[in-house]
Image (cartoon, rainbow, N blue to C red; front, side):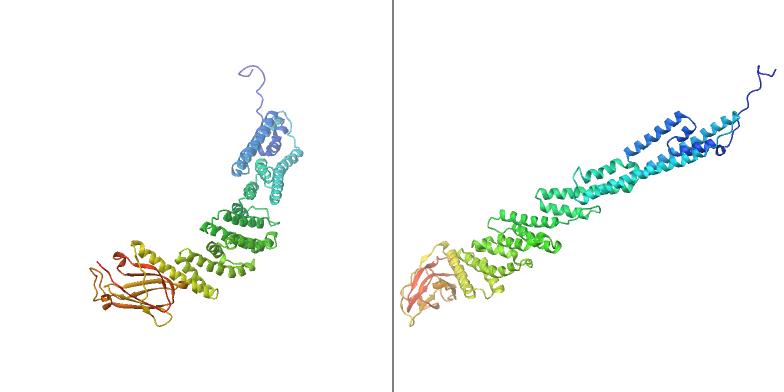
Length: 507
């Protein structure tokens, strides 16, 4: 009896065969390479089959949720590693089956159908991925088509772009995801621009449309002149806002709004030729000019000139008749504004109008412009008189002392003071002047008024011939503002009269 107990000899160990020479190992490995656990089904190892299917399904669901296409370098290696692990495990599971068959004295089955099935499963998996990818591409084309129609609402193109990103991660296509996101970004810009138009914010709408068209994934095209209409509405809005805020003074804000409205109108025929808005531009420019120069019709001349002047250096190719109106109305407004300034005692701006007329419109009311110059000078002389009499005045009412020898009025005033004597006058037709007579070097300030005609013995004599009529006159010295009150009054000088007087100063 053999040592170690009763019975026959121990059973022989099953032969170990190389893995790659095992038919079942190769078939199980190739079938498992699909990731569907088909090798385990072939080996009838149902627990492993169920586990393999669950792992593959779990990985795919997780990949879809976490973004396989966005994280391709993560999920592609993970899935390939799992498929490779299943294939390797299938090799060893298949070899174990063949070894058991050999132990039983059986030969391992050689079934070519398993190889064909393995190839078919790989093709099915590849076709599934390609199908998901092509479905995503189709969905992206649907989104792009809605986008091109301008339908970018939450239930339109934006939703379609979002569905590409949410539902087609298993396409494993980063390009598909990036194009869907770029389309959604562009669509959001277009929707924002459309919202700006709906709210009447045309300036912002133009900026929004500019940002949209600059986006690389913009699809919508302005085929019906919508952008031209927005420009048109924006210009009209600028003009209306400026008009509402106008209170009689051309402010910088008013000027900028009107000039910008003109600029926007002028762009439309150039950039959007053939649109309905381009055809409406000439009438709109004429209306803009009429609105912007409303003070001219109201004969508020200085405000009218400021309004007209802001349009003067602009191009009016789109409305040539405005250039003709400018050539007529601008000098007329300047002329009347000059007189308005004169009448209200604003001589500096009046002189500005005179200078403009002389430089740019020398033939416009030339005689009347010269008369305006006279009135400006007379106004300045009277303003000086008003200043000199603020310290007080002495009534100046000279009487005729003889005849002038002609039809003129002659004034002879002796300056018996050690200071220059100033004689200012404004007379008929605003004739005016200021005459300065030199100081008398030998004369002194009197302690009491001179007696008789002694005042005439010394001094410098001013002799002046004037047309007869009523004059406002003032006589003082250059030191008079700080010393003696000036002689001031209104005198009706008669024709042929001689007026002789002597000017002196007492302490």
